[in-house]
Length: 407
Image 1 (cartoon, helix red, strand yellow):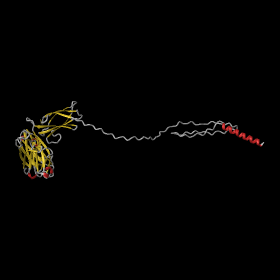
Image 2: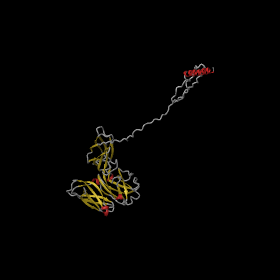
Image 3: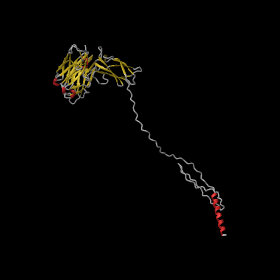
Image 4: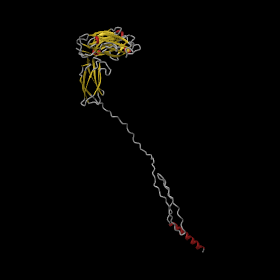
């Protein structure tokens, strides 16, 4: 009896185990799932226990509504792969434009009358984008605009023209420059006063602005005049302050007419004491600016030095740009020399170092000298040089003036 009860118990156990195995599995509790913005949890109630009959009792699970995830902006680092190094850019060379400038007026060596309108004209190719620069420089001058400095437009055909009056500050040889973008065409001309000029004019061709004046030495002065007041010219040299009339170091008055004139003054030996600039004033009608009859005034600022200054070792001649020599004819020369070696100056007319005429000058204590040169009658005409020199070897120095040997 006891055995039968044990068997019945085992049978009941196996039947219960089989029924449990065949039943649906109980859902596992919800798993937390991370999202990019929020975490949603589902709560699951535990499954109710089975009844004694082995049937599982269904239960309702109350699942909350799942909220839609909200995506929050997230800065995600990005990696940009490094590219191959780039070669530095190479500048492409631009060929400069080459301009051809033609000057129709004036022609080379043409005479231009100052204080009168003159028309400059020509053409340029190709047509530039900028204006042409036109400058007229008297021989030896470097001051921009002293005689003429202007800019002119070029028309669509490449032609240009300019009509201007030339300031009557200088006469004699001059050079007209036409420039554009580095191209410079030079035309030699001659500046002159009109024979029928009715205005009062006094030009100063020597010395030029910036040239050297030596204390205690002779200063050569020259120019051209028309219609002077009382037929006279006044020349004054003012020391520091040079832009005033306070310190008149030297002066001269002389008669002149319609044509070239020459003068000379000797500077005081003390002129360069505590002063390095002098003003040469040339007038007619009175020397100072408050003279009521002053009709013309020309001022040149000069560099003033003592004889001991290295800049004082100079040679000058009267108007070197207008010097002319003729084969077989004697020409008289006047000049100055400061600190000549052994008191002598060698004066030579040369071409390619071949001496065509020579003389020795002896300056006085103020540096003034005169001499003459006679080129041979058979000398070939053309460009030559007037060479002034002194000393030898280590003491040798010279100054060369270009000139012409003509018929």
